Image (cartoon, rainbow, N blue to C red):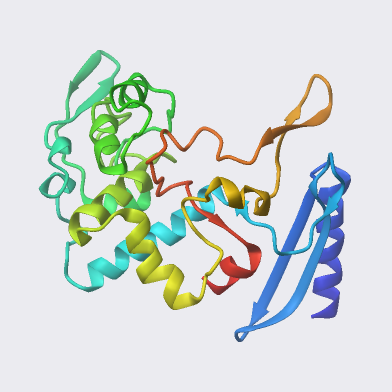
Length: 260
């Protein structure tokens, strides 16, 4: 066990040596912490050391939270995995797919299980023309349920269930959660995931007065060979002020996420 953690520490230190601003890793066994290593800075500019209390935009680590919440509704009999998603989100009733000879109407329907396993044929084009229209036509708000209607306007990459593509499937799953629960996605997550688990520092919104609790974010500039600060807000995946991304929208801490 000790040897394994020694190797883990070396691995994390190697990540730091590559220029990553910080690492914070926690391991639980039987519900108890057996390892914790943190190092680096939550702000390179101000040289603020990581202390384990900072919140982070966790991006795709949101996906398991969304899937767990949806499966809770499935356990309650609110939908079936082989139900057509269009039974709940009608905009997916008539879909089109890209082919070698052009765009044509799909032969298969998108099932709810396709959303879970990323086999719906959706893409991860967060700058698609449909999403741009959603931003424009909602005046930058992009409410989650309304935005899913725009995502459905994009032609699929392949027939549903006939391929796999990392995509906006779990964002659409958030829209399904809103419909079958009759709650905003973030409110459902708060009531059914965050509160029961005691995830007190997790959310989909952080008011301006709490922005200081978020770690800075950085992109690597390959030309200048340095980390460039890109601020504290979620990059690319928060389409509007009211959009709650089931695939990338959660803010959390390491201590909170290990509870999940």
